[in-house]
Image (cartoon, rainbow, N blue to C red; front, side, top):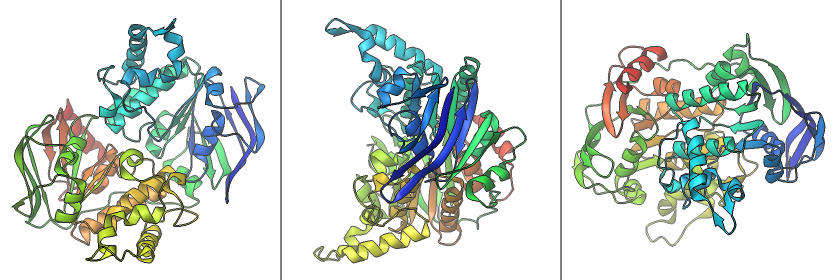
Length: 501
């Protein structure tokens, strides 16, 4: 259906794609894999008219296709769901879904809002987005916004659907709903391009895989008979272990953070505790209350009753600044683009922003750009952040490298307690292993305490040694013996599923 012939694309100082060819067939899910910076997103943007290739050509149904912009792609029934969340915050969910099709609902000088909302609701139901269609989209979680973006792409009647990390913030339940939908699209003859760093998903739902490395085509082959280890080797050029990490040292008796009887617009008497040197996992479906709890702890959301204790003493936290500077608590947001980073600022500025007060000294009059750069460069090396320069603006990095910067700024602040919300969203297998190792060492070697919020079950099993299961803003179950007995992922998944039933 769609043929990419010998496409190349350069940016200043970077050859993003070098003579890449890919064929997409109708009724097929085609995985596009590679490490961050391999060229996946660039190729996707060429397929939908956001970028123009420097050389090569695109054919649709055997005819040469020249896309001037994304509207051209929509007219040719090619749609993309971007990895980065792109919504109009103050518009409703329905308006965001139908945003590029508003003219279809024009009735003279007016808009037929009833018809628009009804059409949007159909696509919300398709992706399992259970929120009021007329509510402002700004109030949705990152995962819910992602589902809205998928609904928007589907509403265009796409024959070619490009999905860039569509499950990055989704739990197993939401991902299963999406996969069932993709099966229906296959039956309807749609060609689906599926970019993900979750290799289990590739093996489960995809028919064909193309692997890019450093902008070059490595291989295209059927999924049938392909093993995970071989996939990783194709992507990074070497083998990599990704097994159970073992047991953490038993956490100390000291309770470093305790939530007692939290009440708010979300919760009615919720509580939990976190011990020194512990990795505590919070698992649940989208909208179950995990992120809302994190943001209540750091003071972003108010509470009407209940206590928060840090190292046994009552804590008054009214902002992220209070959490960091008064109590040494850090929060890695699940939504790096809107909440985690200053996209126009440099890599070193984003990393060092949490320690500016320390770098400026007691009088706050002698801020040292050199000290900022040294801190930034240290973390760039430690997390293997791929950037042409420490002074590169973060918005020009790949999604996975942006996520590393988002984590780095809290690591450089040396927090005692770190709340990490979806730490490896949009991160490749090599970087994912590096981030997991950092989190593990923080607890096992540095006695840091971590609250891990993740929708990635293997990630949760690998790192968390106690898991609280959330449902409808309540804790409905606890898996507490994970540090004394090795449970297989399937066993933990089954136990969590029983709590969520």
